[in-house]
Image (tube, rainbow, N blue to C red; front, side, top):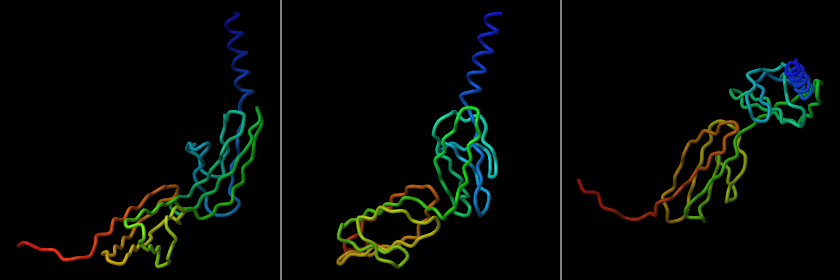
Length: 165
């Protein structure tokens, strides 16, 4: 009997330590809901149940459209918190490293300052690296939403060589 009372009390205590989060987007398509970086398996609009009381990071992602949003939400025990997100175009935090360090870098035909470490929108981009006395290099790269790619370029010195046939 005492064990049953303890189990009932612990279940009540646990139920009081959780709440829920109702997640919607203000405009745009529905997307997948993540809480503290973990996919809930739900898409907006939806209510995420059994969320531990406290502060949580709520994200909505629409990867196929490169859209996302994030907000912080306080969940109170036995209460429903609400999170309405505005979705915006998102990309990945991108770094470009070049040798020689004096090389010029263009992203989509626009000169960028080096060293480059900034967000690029998701999708295809053309990277061009040039330096006097070196063979230029051009690459087409793809940046995924939420990714953190580093692109490295090591330009070859111009000069003469030999080919043996």
